[in-house]
Length: 372
Image: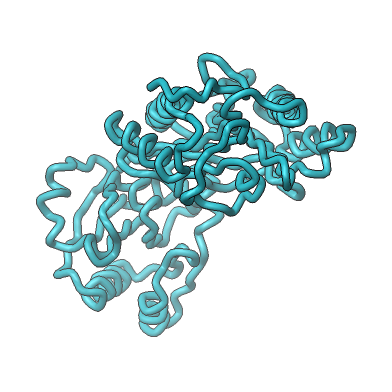
């Protein structure tokens, strides 16, 4: 099994079994990863954890790829023909084989038919949700995970530098997305961890928008939020530019958001309550004319997926710990002016923090001449 990733560490118990079926959890415990479509193209995969180790359940059509992957995180392999019913049978056979009194499952990920079939066959078997324990375990990154996250951040940073060079009036939002994603793909990104945000002008003031046919105009704010996926780990960061010379109001909005982000980052160190970061944001917002436009979502954890618990917002619990990788991403969105969000990835170190993202030259204005 992968060092440090065991049934005992996940559950805090010596005996029992865990069935993990989400893509991220299967990758975390077995090393099996694919960006192919699921489940039709891949079939269901799962990790079966016991005190003896970790077994991978997979469709037999993936035998060759799994051999090529050389997975070091598994202690056994269990293949099935490929249908959903055969996958369910493989799981039920493991339940019958190991006869656990307690089975830990991911309530958010387990397919309903499988859940019902396990319940029907369970008898006195206790089913317990392992989701929170799994998130907590994945919060603290190993050195290998940090290396992968650094690589994913570097690809995304280089792509943002490229975006700065190509932005110009007349480009469509979707055109920018195509150029930047192509750039990241060539640099090694396996896929996009989420739909890239690239919104110009007043469209940047609505955080739920996705890129469209809108053409950038001189003086538009242009918000870009994206990441890369390298070796199974994601990145996520945001910068906002003005294509041309910014107005006084645009520059003041940018300076405000930048100040909030940097002061919140300055609070980061092991042992600090996540709520302290939120309090810092609220304090800065309360004394500024743009404060009422600042969204309360301040950040989140990053790992295998780009957005993982804890989410840093009012009511958040828990403390920062060494080895966490989080984002700090304040954003203020003003109808008629546009939105500014600035987001960086931060590694919590032994005595403070390290910023994993950033531009060679930070600032709002880009020349808008499109010199790639």
